[in-house]
Amino acid sequence: MKKQDELFAGKAKTVYATDDADKLILHFRNDTSAFDGEKIEQLDRKGRINNRFNAFIMEKLKAAGVATHFEKILNDEESLVKKLEMLPIECVVRNISTGSLCRRLGVEEGLDLNPPTFEFFLKNDELHDPMINDYHILSFKWATGDEITQMKALTFKVNDILASLFRDAGMLLVDYKLEFGRYRGALLLGDEFTPDGCRLWDIETRKKLDKDRFRQGLGGVVEAYEEVAQRLGVSL
Ligand code: 5GP
Image 1 (cartoon, helix red, strand yellow):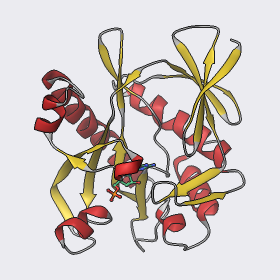
Image 2 (image 1 turned 90 degrees about the horizontal axis):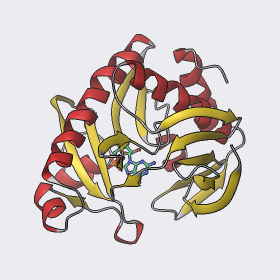
Image 3 (image 1 turned 45 degrees about the vertical axis):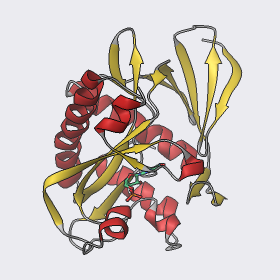
Image 4 (image 1 turned 120 degrees about the vertical axis):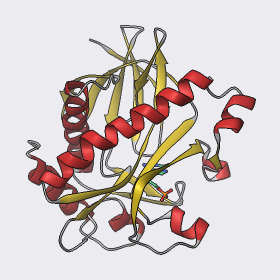
């Protein structure tokens, strides 16, 4: 597998073409960003931790029957993935109220959401990823009705799998964001699953173990990611 041109540099990952037109290389960088790129810092070891963590979660999801783009780890900071036609949509499931949900709806932080709630956001930094609904997605043809149904079902399936995985390791999966893409007529989970794109709290103390430590300037960001990985048994 030969690495070729850089195709796209996101806020925390760079995507490279390969000599296989169906495969891409994801490079997990140490860059950590918040507030749509307004706050950016380099955090030592984070690229490697996220690469390993993402591989571990993607393998768990695959084993539980969720089709993903993940193929294999290539080295410390890079993984090989299938090339998807990404939908410009973020799918968020929330088990506990916090973050933008509380700011938008004025609801109390830390409420158990039963059933968990689901939201779509448009992936657009300039517009600060506005919330959208099924009708926006259909009217602007960002995805089909069938894809909407699949995105919801798959995102909730991921919740069933991962909430219990994290609970068994003493953590609450508070919320998370997933992105999907098309591949040979199927919808696959793309992007990544790391503490950059989810919220994890210690089950007893509710200590934050995710990117909120960076967003809120709490410190110990990489140490928290390492703790999450260790609790799950991810080899770093
Ligand atoms: P909120 O809407 O409360 O800001 O975020 C909800 C969940 O989705 C959080 O776990 C957050 O980390 C994740 N999330 C939402 N938007 C983004 C994004 O643009 N990038 C990343 N990495 N995570 C996001």
